[in-house]
Length: 543
Ligand SMILES: Nc1nc2c(ncn2[C@@H]2O[C@H](COP(=O)(O)OP(=O)(O)OP(=O)(O)O)[C@@H](O)[C@H]2O)c(=O)[nH]1
Image 1 (cartoon, protein in one colour):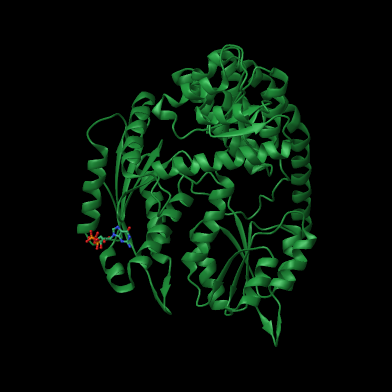
Image 2 (tube, helix red, strand yellow):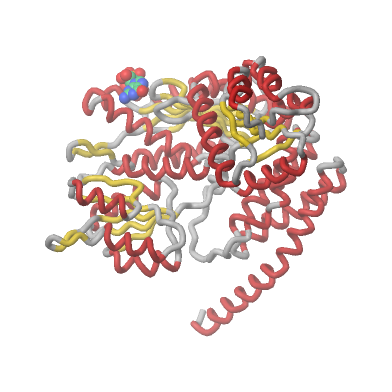
């Protein structure tokens, strides 16, 4: 194609894209309008119409440069499909779906350039946008190693020799992370100080990781002043760098906190709800204390804010009532009341709640007080459900999850695959490099699994160096392709200790069920045994 005709095609595409973008708000308003009716009724015709619109949107938005919108429309399309197939979801899921439908508009960020973007995993692609990392490193060998490792973790990587080459790219397309080598010219360091200047030119601080041969206080300090989220001394342990990126992503991508407000002052409760929602939390309000138990059951709050003076009972009685149910022990309960009397406040704290926030409360204070309590409640909950080394579900929870997904698959007559994954010759890794290094390898695999699997998949640490992944709506061929990709990426990942580098491989066994026939975990385990006995570093599929 000549340059001119290529230009004209690009112009037409841009025009089409602009037309699509102009019509989009109208379409989204229609969807939001339909969604608002769903809180009242369960009309099959309405659901089918919504399904049709979402299906169309999911298909078209990606092509016109709105990949996030497309992804969100696809998820909602599936949710509505399930609604149509198996009936109305529980109240919490229902209100989530309705609010996501109403908020689809927030998926219209700046259209992204759709050209030359690598395709996601076709059969079972991760449902996350690829995070971008700019690597500024003049050592090409090291840059290539870092780049290869980051790509296998699903990052979109761009390499620059020097910071000045990266600056215009940073300003025109902001990366999610910036990895910068600290370079010295004589006494003058060129990394952190330049980054500190750059931080002044951007609205939100850049997430920067420094790599350096310098291990001294001054360089650390200038890195901190430049807003470093990580600092790694060469020789670089790439797994540690990835650990740092992933921990940040997990923090920023974790689900919204859920807050239940119990207050008979409807207007004030609505105000608090709006303030907390603006800070990214999910909020439900109960004005009548008799509705509290139902809300606890359906909404699963992490924090409950209780007014003290309520129509039928006192707030501390409600706190005690909540505390009677052991399932809600993880929930943080705080009073939010205009009670100023310290004796009365102390009495309430001794009887159920943990803390007292007094009205009037500023919006800022409300948000900070609730987020701190929610974070603590979630930490506690994670400590109960999740393995501390990897953050993955513990043995008993992942087994539970396998059963939940098997039952769902049987109800919907859809496949579910279970993969059992085990590190190869891991004892040798521990014996040669030490247990802490072995731990790093385990963490690296858990992060790779998290990166490659979808949000709807579940991953658990089944044993010391054994993992289980449950993949709903994934047939055997797709599961094998997915695990093969993970196996290859993991085998290519280099670990280094004291200037020695090594690689570790994994084996995986897969079993797929359509209805709940036989023990799928046992079948996956048998397939894993087969993968091990036929040479390791491979994926085997059973029945
Ligand atoms: N570093 C570390 N090692 C662990 C952890 N949990 C289990 N292991 C080690 O994992 C190793 C598992 O060894 P084996 O069951 O003999 O298996 P393997 O050496 O991986 O050999 P194959 O599975 O047959 O390829 C043991 O050395 C355990 O001590 C952990 O949390 N951290």
